[in-house]
Amino acid sequence: MIVILKRDHNPEQLESLVNWLQEKGIAIHTSIGEANTILGLVGDTSKLDIDLIAALDIVEDVKRVQEPYKNANRKFHPEDTVIPVRDTWIGGGSLTIMAGPCSVESEEQVVAIARAVKASGATMLRGGAFKPRTSPYAFQGLGETGLEYLKAARAETGLPIVTELMDITQLPLFKDVDVIQIGARNMQNFDLLKAVGHQDKPVMIKRGMSATYEEWLMSAEYVMAGGNENVILCERGIRTFESYTRNTLDLAAIPVLRKLTHLPIIVDPSHATGKYWLVEPLAMAAVAAGADGLQIEVHNDPEHALCDGPQSLKPDTFDPLARKLLSLHSVVSGLEGQA
Picture 1 (cartoon, rainbow, N blue to C red):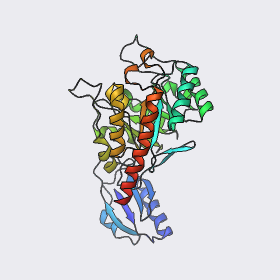
Picture 2: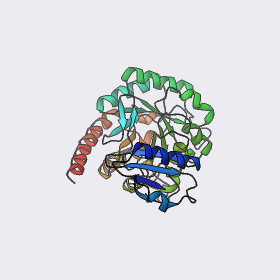
Picture 3: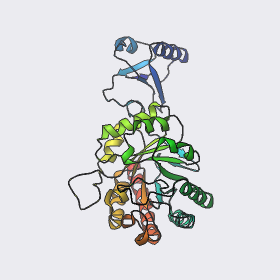
Picture 4: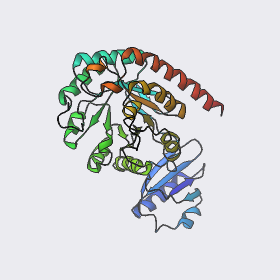
């Protein structure tokens, strides 16, 4: 249920309403926008008298919400969420470009790539220290050592780091990571989602390989229900009958999620396609469709990469693409401003 307050509502009346609702076991999510203040009521609202609430002097309107996700619902939070990360932010009209290697292989490698992608316009460094692999014999990442190499790259370039958390036991190691990534395989690892929901570090949730929009948003709800509202959604392709590409990138997710939720939306064309030559057209399409950012794999020697070389761009290929993406975003933003 959402309660829309009148613009000139009385603070004392609001306090009385909030206290009354909390006494009934209702949690309240308050969203203060330019035009209205909205109270999102979370809990068993079935026994609340909607007519009684609507009759209060401070109330403009009351609506019941049918979707099972509350905190992630745009009806509860009409304004887009903007998530600050060090000296940059995700959402709010900017284009966030997260770039870097699929796997951290050495300090020299990740620092060199970080320098290159920053010079091209990237605002965050992505890189895997812990790697979930289909084969138990494939490279599993450098683990804690890889995290230290990422931190060294951040110290060198100032780029915030984004890296994947695979297990609750690893969480203490991520204390100094800027954005925790929850991978597609863990999108419905609810214990892990609860754990990252009990801290305030930004969390980026990649869509599961066969997840619906509602299932994806419910994963975000798990994190937000724990008190952490700094959630980012990442579309990385879903599994379909088509086998030519690694996955099928669902660009329709961008406008659909824009309607359903206030959370920022990132697109990963690298994992979606598995082919480096498809990254540019799909990255451009994602920006045109309104994505808040992109996650792109960049490797200085893809032919000898320990993980996902075929989908990685070289720095000299990433550079012109990043500049195209930023230019396209400026055009799209200008057109939105004219609408």
